[in-house]
Length: 155
Ligand code: 4NP
Figure (cartoon, rainbow, N blue to C red):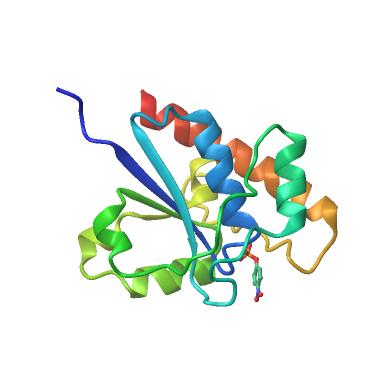
């Protein structure tokens, strides 16, 4: 019998810069038969929008197509549907944990960079207001974190 799929959700504020990259990167490292990866924003600014063109550009440079993704807002039912919820920064963390229906669901929420720097609660800085270089460094941080996540989930 096939075991249940593991479901991972990436969360940032707008769901157009960081979490779409995190979704695309992690998807590229895991077999889709066993894993579902999605992303969402805590804000409602960019619902149904494509990712920021700079995120699309940087992902494409590394062979990942995120152009078909569309923005959506994080919702309480995501706690039921996902096994792991990775947030980018402390504002995302507070927002999502405060929506958790119970302590067990709150424990699903992790700073994504804690996979690289355990227990340090480092944030992935929001590259939205800067230039393309910020998106490059965002990609590298998320790629490191997703390597750890992919190793952990498949070990
Ligand atoms: P993200 O970046 O959270 O990495 O998608 C942002 C994009 C847009 C906005 C905020 C953050 N915004 O306020 O429009």
